[in-house]
Image (cartoon, rainbow, N blue to C red; front, side, top):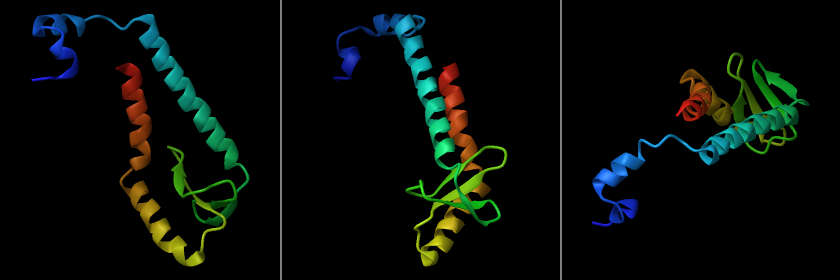
Length: 117
């Protein structure tokens, strides 16, 4: 059966390769990915700096193209300012469901696990 790498290496060789520590290229790749994540977060944070409160922790912003949640401790819901008022209620309910499930914690936790791994 063809399984990519295992076609070329015996199971013992594959097992030995899996215990090799990551090289400088792999470590650099992880650092580069983490730096990209931090830069992306800063860019999003700056883009929502000019916002208008809608209600509670919900804000309208001209720079936002689609609704999202930003923040871990005090998460806020950001909506596009040109969104139709009739469409806002189901979208707000959807984003509040994400908050209730604490979905805003899973992505940073995944980044942390990836950084450690």
